[in-house]
Amino acid sequence: MRTMRVMGSVVTALLVAMLFGIIQSELQEGALIPDTDTQDKASENAAPTPSSEHEDDNSLGYTGSRLRQDDSPPRIVEHPSDLIVSKGEPATLNCKAEGRPAPTVEWYKDGERVETDRDNPRSHRMLLPSGSLFFLRIVHGRRSKPDDGSYVCVARNYLGQAVSHNASLEVASPPHPPRPLTPVPSHSVPSPPVPHPRPPSHPVSPHPPSPHPPVPSSPGTYVPAPHPPTTLIFS
Image (cartoon, rainbow, N blue to C red):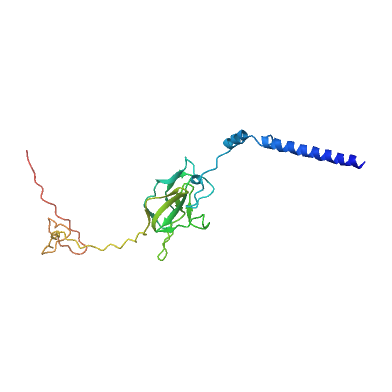
């Protein structure tokens, strides 16, 4: 009985050893190793890892985009022009830039960045979508002149920046009230005096003298006036 048990154990051990040897031989022959051709094809179809040349360029503060062949640095296509504006009037400094990706535009006055409505909603300066700077009204006083100066617009993207020409904004002085006119002495030649007629040496009666002398008469007596002599003419 004991002999049979021992023989059974030996047979079991032999079977286990045979199975283990079969598994090892199959592993050595490559039955369970993946095909190298399949691995090569998979590696060929895999997307290539981008090189360091196409990594993000954060030197200019631009993130989230990779360099592409159709990207281009910004350039100014419309420069601002000099302006002379009256106090309290609206004004616009034009500026337009192109590039890919679309550049952002900022304005500088006398070397300092201009505050617009995007920085302060109460600002009287507005940065338009085109890049132009619009003044709701020109602010100018005796002590404060915030709008008078020299301006430039700067366009930027991750490939670089472009600066426009300088443009001056000058506030026109108000007109002075008219001065009173001062009479100018005339230098013309005086006209000669007009002679006046001299009065007669004897007083002249307003009534012409009568051709007949007056006839004296006494009170209450009627004396007819003499008639002139009658002249008879015979034919």
